[in-house]
Image 1: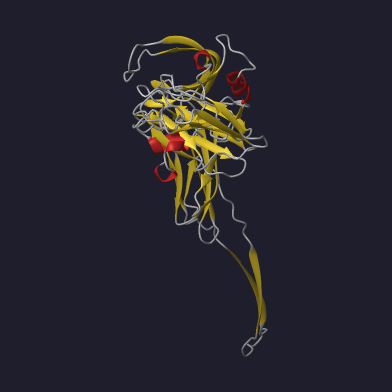
Image 2 (image 1 turned 45 degrees about the vertical axis):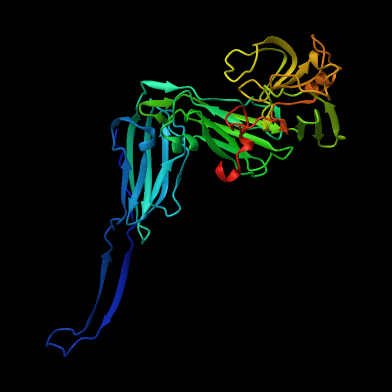
Length: 397
């Protein structure tokens, strides 16, 4: 239904009093007199011209196609509400000429009403209204990330968002993933895996105590032609403390630095010369008390394949690098490299909580940083291999 709002202009009457002097008298008549007259101002039409896209009654509207604009004036108020009267987030541009909804502000398959107001240079107001229905997408893609809301993470935590589809409209997708840090830290994203994954991080490690909020607003975003996001969710997490482990594959030692605690040195084993460990900055992405590890799918493996269940496993790369307990490291940790690329610490087959590996596992969090140096491996670590984005300079991020 179209609703028209009228702008009333108060009319003011001005009484003019004037004294007149008469001419020469006429016989038998009086000379002189006085009179009064009143005038009324006409209603003035605003010069401001409002335009609402889409037009009133439009169907199958793309959520991103909604826009309110004005010519020969400035917007003073725009409200967009759904069928239940809930307002849509949006903003009038700094120049006052346009209004657009916030990313994810409008949902697909919904009806909305627009009420807009504007004024011209003389302050004369005008209004316009419109109602429309957004399209119902034939295809949707669920957008997921690695955040567990309410959890504590380490200073190296990278937010990794998986779209389930190759994203064509990357700018719109980026606007739909908002990250807020309590200390105002700037966060930027980088695309990986053929534009299906967006990783977000700050320029430097997070500061301990920082609260981070993540807003996923993809439900109204066309990620690829005809494919819309299907996720509308808010998340938050906290950076607990700084824990950075530096592995030296040459000396077979790992130095652990944690805020407020003495530096620890832990003997380790790294990858052999045939199967060396990656060099680079990695982040613990998952943790498992017992983890089945296999060589299946590892195309660059030298020698026989393997399959084992290892204790106190902390994953560092998607390709299979772990920091974990290794029962075969007994007598070799600190002296030799014997693994297929993982960083191993002394442990038992069942996993001893009091072993070096057990103690490291108990003190670790997802998001903790592990840096490996002095391995003989020549290939650079792919920043998409796990949460390894810290290997990429900020200028390229």
